[in-house]
Structures are given as structure tokens and as C-alpha cells.
Image (cartoon, rainbow, N blue to C red):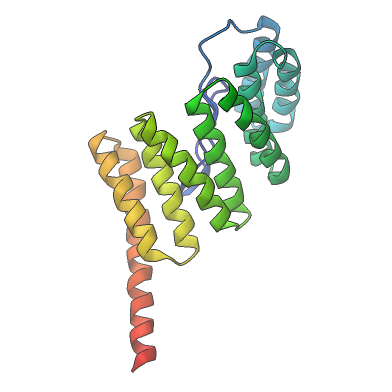
Amino acid sequence: MQRRIRSTACGLLSLLLGGLSLARAQTPPAPAHNPQAQAHRDVADALEAKYDYAGAITEYQAAHQLDKANHLGDAAMDLCNIGVDYYHLSQYDKAIGCFQQALPIQREINNRYGEASALNNLGVVYSHLSQYDKAIGFFQQALSIQRAVKDRAGEATALNNVGLAYYHLSRYDKAIDFYQQALSIQREINDREGEAVTLSSLGLAQRHLSQHDKGISADTK
């Protein structure tokens, strides 16, 4: 699992082969934060550092109650962060519910980055539930947005996520294609850590494809 992400950036759950990792959504630029809500988020962030996700959820929920009337961007961020913490607690149905609530708010305020995060996170949770076809649908929607906003790092993450979902479906040829696209971007933006993980994922997919092809060849003899 990737390290905890601070509450000011709502999570991209990154489906790298080393493990699923959630990201947190971009903080909206305006209006100013409710100071009481921000205080709750600061406490939640400190609790997350101690892996007290249940305590963090309580604080984010308090922040959400203060934000939902007049600070929609922060309210969506609160929901996303609650969803990330439910994910860490393996309460996947509740995580899905939070991301689904955040998604229309992100669309209403035209936060494309936040929308992509919510879609990606839904894909990661459904992957954990082994609903890979459904996950791919969410990842593809996130990928489309990442390309539209020219977020190259986010695009690489989405490509990796689609690749891993296909890997779990034993569609190794498709997985390889998406991993190779991600690898190209990671090299372009000099993401050395991401490149290393993708190369490992790519190698596994290629090895499984080779074994699969050998099995088909043997069956046809």
C-alpha cells in the first residue's frame, strides 16, 4: 500500500502491481475554507498518520457537516477522504458510497481533477471486489479526463490501473499494451519510481502471456 496522502489532495487509488493505493482530491481554489472544518481536517490528518482511520472518519464527517452548505469543493474533498479511510478499513461498500456522493459534486463545480480521482477510486474499490470489468469502465472514464486536462502523471496512473485490471482478467496482451503506454509517459516525465513499478508489472504480464501461449500451443498439438 502506498503511503498515506495528506487530506489536502484527495486520493488517486493507484492500481500498481505492488498494491492498490488511494489518492486524495485536489483542494478547490475558492471560496476560503471554513476554519472550523479545516481544524477537523487537520485533526483527521494527524490521526491518519497514526493509522487511526476510524477516528479520522469521525473528524472528516464533522468537517463535511460544516462544509456541505457553502463549501462544495471542500465537502467533496471530505467525502473523498472519508472514502479513502473506509477503503483502508476494508469497508468497501461505504467507500463506494462516499466516492459516488463526491462524484456529482465534483462535476457540479467543474473540478475535473477531483472527478477523475473519484472515478479512479471507484475503479480501485471494484477491483478489490474482483469486479474487474466494472473497474475498467471507471478507469477508462478517469483516463479520458486525465488526457483532456493533460495530466500526464494521472494518465500514467490510469493506464497502469487499466493494465492491472486486464492482468487479473488474464488478458495479458491488453495488460501489456496499457503498461507500455504508461511506461512511455513515465519516461517522458522522468517518473523513475513509477517506471520501475511498471517495468515489474510489464515483466509479469509478459511472462504470463508467454506461459499462456505455450499452453495453447501444447493443447493444439
